[in-house]
Image 1 (cartoon, rainbow, N blue to C red):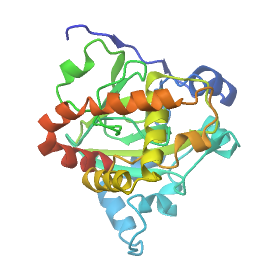
Image 2 (cartoon, one colour):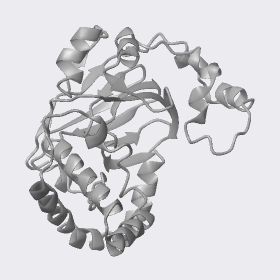
Image 3 (cartoon, helix red, strand yellow):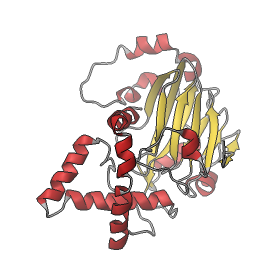
Length: 302
């Protein structure tokens, strides 16, 4: 690959302690791969597709409980062993969580999630219980071009996308754990016939890492808040139209500036500048328009 800036992700073979994880990885928002952390989990043997279907089939059918409903099943919880450093993080007052403690994913071979980063400045801990997935992580200091006001990449040409970017490319193998910090773009491809992952997510209440993508997120969050609450009916209608047309254009969730303490507060000038920077993406967006809605919906479901 021309202009190859691939790096080697930090890799260890044993789980770090709570203080070490915070200092070396979480506070600095640097990815970490822990090899074989879940190799002795009962889930690796028990979570065969036939058994899972049989046991999960006994769960009640509930409408509007969300895509992560099965993560609330005690059938699954008894088969996993949360690492100690994660237990301490989730129990601390340093972070916020949504209502779902953890999430359960099953994917078949070649299931693909295109480049994006997670909203709400989410930190993700993911364990590959079964199968294998290929990951590409791109640093928020060398961000990818996105659809206007969203967190999804415009382009599908991976060689072009990664040119002059700082990125990691690796396989997450059965039993491995990955820490994915906020604002890191990622593309994931399932490599086996059956792939099972579980994720824990949390958002830090405070950060000192002010990456290029964090600044963009703070600025676009401020812009969308301004549009939504504008005194102009026309501006509000344009905002509502965009939300309907591109379901994730407003996918900021809680609103970063209202719940994360950081040294960066966007000025009015920064918001105006961000608005025009986002508008400059519209010509590229129009070229990919037939794929925009399908891409955003596909990523939203994975």
